[in-house]
Image 1 (cartoon, rainbow, N blue to C red):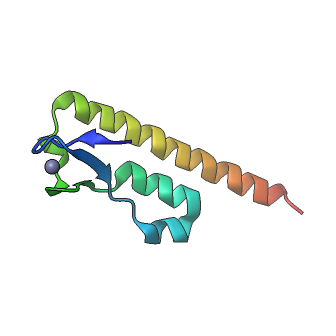
Image 2: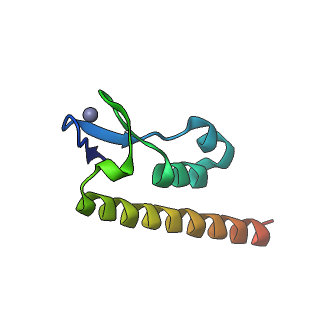
Image 3: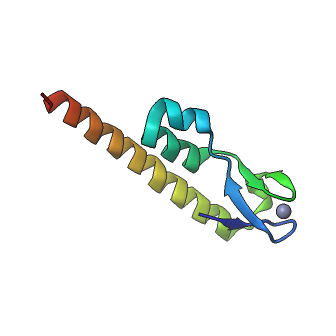
Amino acid sequence: MAYVCPRCGGPVARDVSAGASILFGLVGALVSAAFGSLKCARCGEIDQSEFPPEVRSQMTRNSILMGVSGVVLFVVAITFLAQGS
Ligand SMILES: [Zn+2]
């Protein structure tokens, strides 16, 4: 999911933490993808307030969607483990 940098017009990506992905697997990856800091390859970290309002509301929607997916996956995994063997 890429956004456009408000400063240079380049692509901005979430800074997905590798550590979180290793620790929490897919759930951690989803959560850091939803709430990680936004980084432009040229300008570095971009504050959410620098993006236009419509992009920010889109980000909020995407973050909620990914956060909910992470929680659902977590619950499914726990349920599966609890029923397993
Ligand atoms: Zn930029």
